Length: 483
Ligand code: ADP
Image 1 (tube, helix red, strand yellow):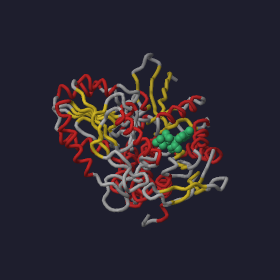
Image 2 (cartoon, helix red, strand yellow; image 1 turned 90 degrees about the horizontal axis):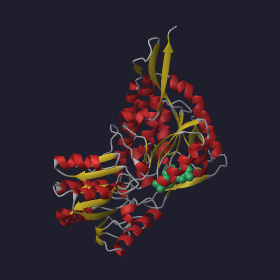
Image 3 (cartoon, protein in one colour; image 1 turned 90 degrees about the vertical axis):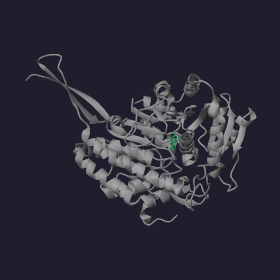
Image 4 (cartoon, protein in one colour; image 1 turned 120 degrees about the horizontal axis):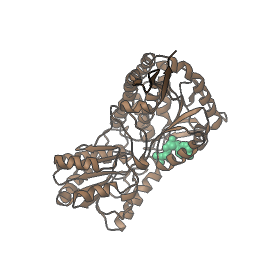
């Protein structure tokens, strides 16, 4: 791993403005999923260090919230600029610890930075309101205030963006934050902390802790100082954290699993639909919560779509993201490989046909062949569970209502996609899909300017856009009598 600024590779945590080791002195290794090589070690912290970070965030909060939004924005803007100036190094670090192709990592760094820039500006527009009164001797006003100390727990699939879309709005709103990144990808998080320090984020406002997820999570969810938890990860862990937060009634933002449907109607532009499906399915080796998980294709165009998609899937270049042109890196770990294998075996056992791929890649390790299955039906595991890997299963349908019903037949409700050129159908289907996000004639929906989030068991709250900052604000009602 070649960094032009080696000080971005940190092997200590950042607590209360100081680079810190675990109390126990213990650390754990971060490895490159493409090679198995050890990249660095980071501290193995637990509840005691977490408590200190929370207390530091509490201590830092009054001065941070008292700053004007513009003063906070100036600091956040510097943080954004530093991320962009160090885009190449941050991307190398990310590819090394996460495995995504370098071009995707560069894209993620820019995407991650965009949340800091966006919310630095949005913080200036946290407007209150006056409400026409209910009594002539009263005035009714509404102000918005930062919630307070926030805790964030983030996943490995977007090692930078899942952090900034939480700390961007939190810090801009005047909250402080303690972050626990995923154990697989702490290096991106620590590099962001290094840049936050250089940007002038005051000590205690943003701390990063690595280590035992249960112990750290227990403190973050149990400590009464923490007023809000924001989490991106699996629905299973999200439910657990929600329970743990019940004891102190914390506010919650949860970005959980998806099971995204991708519907291709017979009036669609098939080439555009193939391009969209490729982008949605195979980005990050299929490891995003908005990746198309179930592809429904209308009977009349099923075979043509399958053939066009197969041609593109065959062309995907699999390899180490740090070594030359690559479309698809390794999966994050063996557990992920086994899940893709399990879904393929289950589908094939129930009659699906492997059109492309289907097995582990000859590169070994956690590399997997980009895979396309046809003849998939609702009885197969791929219909119910998020594969989180490079597997595109094609379901056949005949009627529009049948597709919408199948798409909604899941406990999840994050992203959905469909391709059609019929205006009547576009409105019907867009309104019929029980999802927080609907991509219409596009497979890419993520941007800092739009609200990202799910319904049903996919979560609570929205990230990005003007709505994203509301999740870090409390509404205060002032009722003023005459004096
Ligand atoms: P994934 O399956 O994508 O790894 P997880 O939900 O397991 O998703 O992980 C997302 C984040 O949640 C990671 O930072 C992980 O360390 C953290 N995590 C996992 N289990 C717990 C837990 N019991 N308490 C707190 N955090 C947890």
